[in-house]
Image (tube, rainbow, N blue to C red):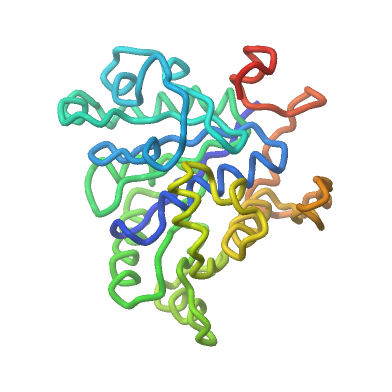
Length: 280
């Protein structure tokens, strides 16, 4: 199996990048894929703050320091996917070698259908690494002018390192007609989708669950679900309330269409496989 790697990137913090990464992980896991979310904000790791993740034997920083194997840092997360969380001490940042991320991703490609890397905000060498090794770079921005301008810098940085920008996801979109399309045009990128302003986002983070699982019928959750399934080349289930999880067949040419299928009849997280369903 060779999994697909998505890097979720933005020009600065505060635009919903981590929320987007978390909910795309939950949506693709809901679509019956094995998924791992990598918290690659080496200076300000925060996935562990917004998700109730079981403690692993190591952190991503330990792995990047050469003190642990990649799968030692994987733990079960709510939402049916696994997560690799970074350390939170300032000493962890100094130990981590960003160049080792490529080796980490190579291991994860062989274990998971989908790897989603939540990159750090801003422009730095740390941010550059996942932009160059991901199969698809997903830009995240709000429609505000300053956010779009900062995201354009990330787009340019991705181009310089040979990254493939698939498009932009606009968050906190209001009711103004054409707001998302205008921002995408300014970025010169395809508009993958828009996520409306939704108070349930903050509630889900307080509950430390992905919005897709916490409030599956909320407007923002449905937007994230549609985005996740679109990346897989599938249509989302017709109904989430009655448990109908059947999705339409994959469409040709979609971003995820070339990922090889696993031979297992039931797709589960890696931890679920290893523990016979006790975890994950």
